[in-house]
Length: 103
Image (tube, rainbow, N blue to C red; front, side, top):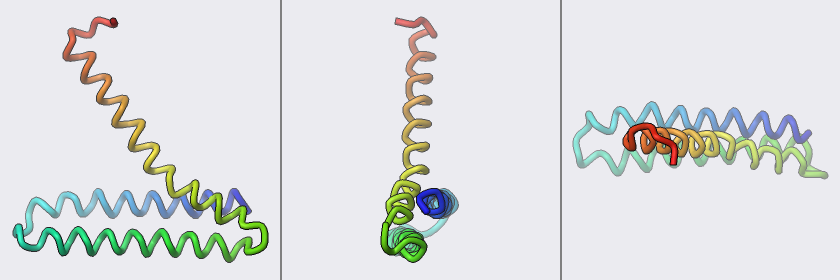
């Protein structure tokens, strides 16, 4: 059950990231007054998606709750990947700016 929960959470996390990435490009082309509405709408949609994933994982294993814990961990997979990617690219940019010499 935990592996199913991780899979459910990972898929929901990836879909949430896709929603953020897809809608980030549209924020530059809409009027300034509509930006808060659009941001809140997609944030609400992501929260609903995450809640549905957690509820589905709970239904898989309501007694042990291993699937629920796995889904909660799976939701963080996309965030951890984004964080690691940002740190690596930040370090590479810092090394390229310093002439590429290791310190």
